[in-house]
Image (tube, rainbow, N blue to C red; front, side, top):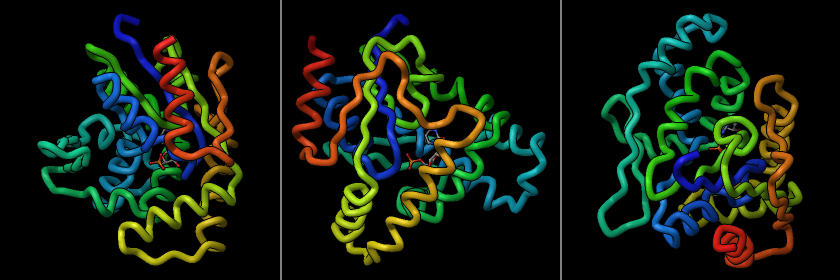
Length: 222
Ligand code: C5P
């Protein structure tokens, strides 16, 4: 691999995105939120009202996905544009996450979105977060991390995130959603969620965000 790549995989709500963003900033590297690609793809499929059993149509949509990430000047926020329309907030909802998880289990969809993800690996380096970054998409990456945490801890983090954005949430419902999505992502045939053999596994249940960042940062600098 010509540029350094750090992969961060793990289940939903474990904090991959926050860790990835901070490390990318520290290193001055590019950032790939691969979940956003699957989420945008799910929205594109949903808006076209196609039959999701029709793999030919799915591959066509995946291949022609008109998706753009724009970082706002002077801010760490990334806006996502699908077919030229800003979709950042709808992209982040649990409903979109669930649609993405269902459609991400389809092998031909994953293959059609592979190169789009690999194209993010440009100088000076890349931090990529998702489910299969270290096992499939960037198998040769120099640095690999797998973050885990109890489902209770992850559901609590998600609730706090929602509240910080001014939304409501019911903890039991969030916990059920988190567990259902993990079960689907871990048990699927194509690129299931699992740690790469050479990944550093960090259980973040009892750790603060900055404690996790410190461990990952140490790995990249070592
Ligand atoms: O990470 P995020 O919650 O945004 O991902 C949404 C869904 O997209 C996941 O539940 C998973 O099914 C799918 N996904 C995937 N592979 C990735 C990233 C996300 O299958 N690399």
